[in-house]
Length: 212
Image (cartoon, helix red, strand yellow):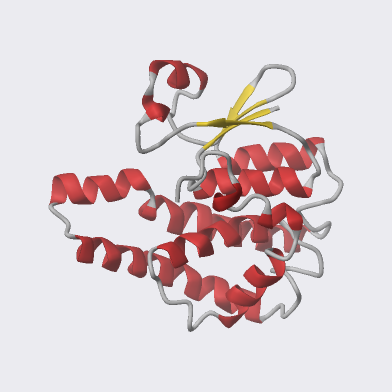
């Protein structure tokens, strides 16, 4: 398999973690978002959305969107599982995933920030306030859910899909100076997850295109 990735993309970071947890090998194809390589004709022909990640499968298909890719990995390689067996618990995990992937991340990604700066005249202070607003709103809900579980990881004693999505979002929060003081359960889970090779090896600074 080949993963089209950018070291600082939290969506690509999720897929790197999931591939690591599943013990799957892949080739890393760097796509520089700052140089807008994701909008090149060659890349858009592969992934019409012009986003990372994209995963080229062993049979030559190309998959897009981190949730779809990770669900595909879960279905094709169910061991170790990233989702619980119980259907109610699965729904709870997916709710946390959606909170991060649908409510926090889209409002804090590079396209939205560029729009705020270039079209709405947002200052760097405005951008930071924007980040804090949406990350705190999402993290407040996640923290409450994690507090009710009180286990090593978000929903148990083994890492799962919620952790796969949470750790990259915490990385983004730290990168932009968002305070995590009020999120002891989120930081507890992050610390536990980053002790695992699948998480630590997927970190942005470990990627071949890392440039600081």
